[in-house]
Length: 473
Image (cartoon, rainbow, N blue to C red; front, top):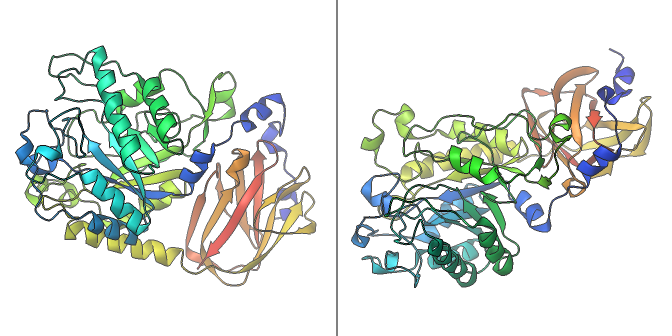
């Protein structure tokens, strides 16, 4: 194969730049989103009355005395999750049952009226600071206990609790809303005043992203860690976005979480955005549970489920590579048990998961890199980050040692640009890909032992801007 011809790209017949492409490239992440992108892997913790009633959804009638952990230790949570490589924790401060795990003056249905009697969110906030983790909050708008749910007054109630969380627990990196909207005590459903909720968060926690039913981070569309072939950060945002998420996530309290898809496969292609009016930077997050359920259940609960109702370390590794390596974030739920501790069965899985991830990215393979032009000429020394100009199409990499993993990142400060690329090793095409964004992870199980590796951009919106290329043994 004459590789020089492969370097002479035509951008697959698409314009490299025009007014429409400039419109796409003008959509860029906010500072809060850039900080979120850097996290890549963090954890959910579902914990509450459901932990003690062996349910996924409470109905709001649970007595506060049900919540009675005997060994609750938020330091243990943080230690275990930090060891797994986590960068933060999103905690269920209130689930659909309305039971609050923080000290609130707006309802008696809280941990302060339980035998435990202490503010769990405050404890977790302190532990996160101690272990260098970021704290996020899940505060369910659906409240099956609060009498005002289903009336306009409920929005006041929710804003009051949201303000308590925003002002009482230090820096919060994320507010996570699933948008569930079932009936309350009075049989009514609630109209959620989302814009008002967002305004409270922006006022008190300006660095926090608002996820799922929010403007900053979107739901991937399934609970199995499956990303799209082309995962775009620049998408159309419409008034129906929150309704779509709410109607498709957490439909019921069934246990067998699957790789279901309930949103469109294409969110950001040129064809999809051509007539879109409201473009927004809204990257994807994949929420997955380590157990086949969000709250902790004993083994008897999962007796008929695959793998005993628990994901294996191998599954988690695949999901990590698929999500973090597919321009999405990995949000892994790890629920504590009735003692208030992460159970040994989950700790063992996390340890095995972490060993594999650390091993994969432990040893960098040093290399020399040159930028190449469309005629195959080497003319510019490579750098940690580089922008490909009009006649430049890729990079020639000279590895010092055999490698099995390759990671490419775009500099997303300048939007998302690469639409298609190819990788060659000693003249042979070894893989192709579409979008890159915050990160693309490619594995070669048998290893690549080549004198020369070529990264070629074959289609792009404007000049590609690559942040880094990394090789690992």
